Each structure stands twice: as C-alpha cells, then as structure tokens.
Image: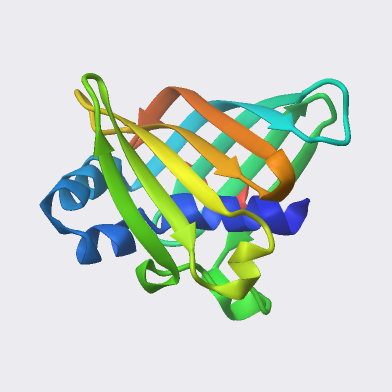
Length: 173
C-alpha cells in the first residue's frame, strides 16, 4: 500500500513534466497547480472485486516544492507517509512524462487528463490514471486510478490551500 501511495503522490507531483511535453493546455494546468506549497483535504474510495463494500478513507496532503510530500490518513486508521528529497533515498524513481501516453479530453466544466503507464513498474500498480481538472481554476480536483480486474481508487480533493507557509518539520520522518 505504501508503494502504491508513493506512486500516486509522485504522479501528482510530476504534472510539470507532463506539461512540458504535452502543449499549451497542460502548461496552463501546470502553472495553475504549481505553487510553493499545497495543503488539501482528501477523500478516497477504493473498490476491489475482493470486497463487498468500497473502502473509504480520508486525510490531508501537504506538498512543498520541489520534492516534499506528506500524506496523512486520519480515517479509518491514522497513518503518515512522507516523501522528501526525491528518489535518492530509495530505489523508487519518480515517473516522468515519457513513462505515460497522455490524452486530454474536454467537457463543459472540466478537463480529463488520461495517463496510461508505459513503464512496467507503474503498470503493476495501475492501468490508467484520470485526472479531473476544473476549467475555471485549472486545479486538479480528483484522480481516478484504474487497476486490473475492475479495481479502482478515486481520490477527491477539497479545501485546497496554496502558497501557505509549511514548516520543514512536517516532512521529517
């Protein structure tokens, strides 16, 4: 589960790489989501073919540029995952634009950015990620992560605060 969360968080941190390789719209979305810091509440719904009911969880995410992330789970069980300093501390490698095929779809109120992994280690965790981006603000509002066999995870973000000072102590293990 921690590795899945790490990959998911890395994708959210890597929007700049996608923007550089996918044109003007993604560049604008990148600019709208590129802040010195971000704090947001999140709600997660996980669906698995193995369980009768969806698994629900919630918490808070903190991101600080260039490479710090704190993922707090407050419900149903409290836990904290921290990524700080990039891949140098582990065998984990941040995804890059070249690791995905990217498609953008346009509707009345939002854009959908569809990311399909080309890299084998990413394909082990998901077959597709769909980022929903609000048209007015260009902020990422949700991420739907589709797995194999009908499994999926939906992350929805709310109470998004940007460019708020965050202490470095938040990202210490």
